[in-house]
Length: 272
Image 1 (tube, rainbow, N blue to C red):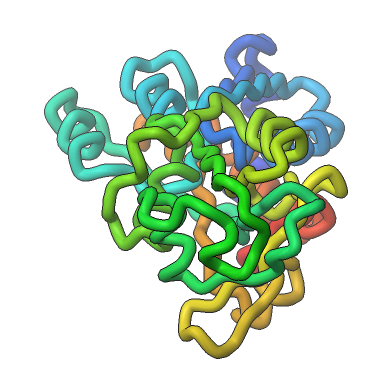
Image 2: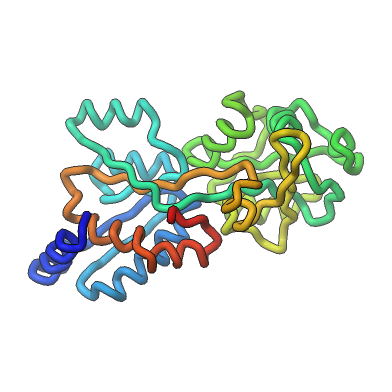
């Protein structure tokens, strides 16, 4: 969308009743912080705009988009083939926009002496093949695996990138949100989990990760930007093409220099 189109859209919002310019965003808890912050900045620049943002997970957001109860779905994974087919069957044309990138951090209890793991070790842990920390150089302590629920895009991405699409162990503890992962891992000495980079807290310890069994890198904005850290994914906004006029002003702002600076300051990786 060019500047002229953006101006016309913004002007339309000034001329129409406020509810016509209300926009709903729903979905990924990973994307939630930057969606909220960019929405607040956008509303400050467009006083007649109204944007509501709620989480719930990527799957929840895309389902809401398909049933017309949200204007934008936040997603931390690409849309599934089954979701695309469902949209086509309903005569809907969904559009995809990458708004940022995110590094996924593996976190453990701060007292854990283990500081680094290979992808293969992570796969074995999350699949239940390695069950005690002493097997990877740690204390003689049972590993407690925390994961996101199956509707989470973070769950899907970790399964794809780290587990190479193999199944998680059946006894892993499913958490409804990223905050619950942080809380559970911080309170359980044998715990391990995964969270988006922006959610890293002093309450947990991050692990250096290697995909080549030689070069290890800590999850950080710098390491993600220079591609030293391997677990990085795109973050998406999806919308219905027929509603492009409703959402294009907000999308323009999110992808602008101002919007991308908000994203970077929030601990995410800008697209430009």
